[in-house]
Length: 283
Image (cartoon, rainbow, N blue to C red; front, side, top):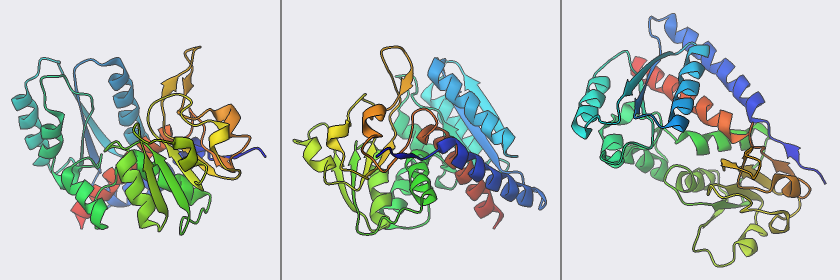
């Protein structure tokens, strides 16, 4: 068996087309969905991410503002800037690129963003809304993973899903989203005693730990769906995920590649969240 690919680039393109249509409908009412992206410091990876986010907005008919600040910016200055963006009616979504310089408390910064503009889905109010099944903003990466499962028509009800990783950004919200679709969910992490015993029972595996080859072919039951959220480099310096792709694709039923899988979906779901924020603000 060779697994079928879940193509994140193709699905992203489709979803971004829908975003562009909905943005055009808002523009016809005199509203342009706006995203503010705030970058503090000169982390090279962050600069690439931010550039991609701004370009994606412009390509889909959204208005984006990139605010770049020196690493010496104080926490008080950043909080004041976010407060101004919270009060700016032309801005519907606020994204503060992480990581922040060490002297700034990231949690405090995230909590200062208005929940109505929290398009990253990291605010405690957004996490709480997801927990109890109320409307809010879902974190972009797990939201993208759910869209990928939806795109292949996968019925999660009654299936066993194993999430490897328990971060607030991917692992925990991913588990809650799967649970909402009536999957039986197991969360595994660095203290899990026998990871292989868990993954061999799984119909769906989401690998999100940022560690190469955490999932190998002998850990996957035939026909399972494997979603690879990892972003690592192999010995040749090429981008790779958490999954041993060449091995696992011989066993799995469906698999996401790296690159071209979850990555493009993350930015796409940011656009979807920003658009939804603008639609809610417009009533």
